[in-house]
Length: 232
Image (cartoon, rainbow, N blue to C red):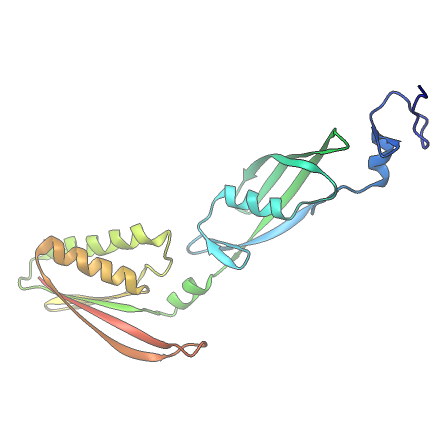
């Protein structure tokens, strides 16, 4: 049987890929393309990440998945990643390796990618900073018991915290205190509605719902502002 040898370096005792020894083949064939540095945007207020045009709650795992999409390979089969992520406030360092097979030969490629985190304001947080709101929660009390007032405000704030991770508009933008209650302006209609329902359920009150027109958005859809009045 004729012994194989590498036509470039003459090696005979190495694994062969497409007629060349493994080392010489990899010198002349680029099987993997990866950036050394990439940048991802994060909202400095709600901390969400902008990934493929959409905002998602921050997670290192999501950053790793996003980086994997940017690693391009050619000809490799059974591709897999073994990576580690080292995050800090300004960047995430992704290290590890990409493994794959070519001509039944297992290949490994080391990776080291620096993910820079650019601080921006997402659309929702930007409009909230200008006191945007979709719902106004009006709470009116039969008594002037201050502990009851504080309890109601606690319910509203806890509702915002609960919803915020999936609805970044679930924030209080303003509170107007009145003699017999207060008006709470909330960025999200859903959050305002839920807070009103929880208050009514807790104290046995009734909810009166109404809305007013607030213009037309870029798509031509009518915008509305909702009011939830709770008497307790």
